[in-house]
Image 1 (cartoon, rainbow, N blue to C red):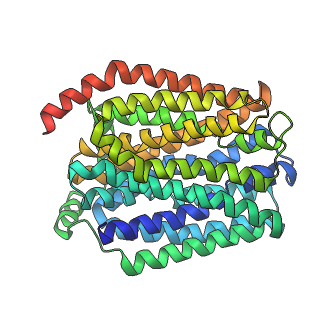
Image 2 (image 1 turned 120 degrees about the horizontal axis):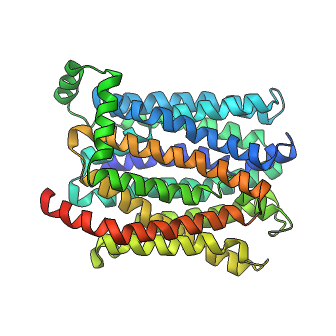
Length: 408
């Protein structure tokens, strides 16, 4: 593996590990210590992604102008600060619903630089290897979700909610140091100078992003990526509550963390290992369509496990495997059909819309869990993925065939 790619992979993994640590902590703390409703819990989980939605295009475009490395460093430094504030809330020094919301908003603001990391991968990989490169970033996410929730759940049960949160701050600091010392700038200086001469106006940035959405191939893929992320995000704020409730399995926070770890492990293996031989044997279009079906079945069957753990694990397996396929292939296709000098902006837009999906998803999931049924978030995700399957059948094949002829 290219040393540059490995360092970016390691940096993203460490940073996402810190984020993953909070996954089993926030819903449980919000419900048991702050007595928040499921609806408000969904908003608390989702506000992180709302801020990413707002600021991802900005950081992506800034990485096109000033380079990838400065944006990565800025975001990691901010993450250290946001985790410290969150930790102070969780240990009771600043115990407040409003401060928890602010801390999560700050974390989303500073984490909106992930488009720069993806642009870095695009800078240093040829088009034919781009899906594989994006798969490594996806694997970093997946591994963060493997070990993060497990560490968070175990440490929270033994040492309280604050300890693993301050550990997250330390991990982000470590990622910052690694990026500063070992990540070399991937964007040529002369390209950045040319962009500086063109200026950074809000109007020009918006026009470029709107143009990307109107692109007959890139725009469609970005919107389809949004649908996929929304579907799985329905359960971000509610799976923990379901697993801990009598409707689910009456698990404690540590036991739930094992389920998150299992899901993350399946996703990481899929994106980092399994996807490579699959893409050698099958066309990306067919794998994408199959991934929609598999993920939809996994999501929709979770509430029907009927207190049988094997059935729940099988549903999670399908959900995570399908999601791992879709995220890697979707990002790879978007990157292939984007011009090199706008990679940061387009990938930033993609992550921004994905962040909007991660805000709408948990907010919707918490709302319907609260007012409709504990099964509603899972069923919503499954139904939407069936719709994504239909869209893929009708649109993706034709657009991909045309783009292949025009881009190769």
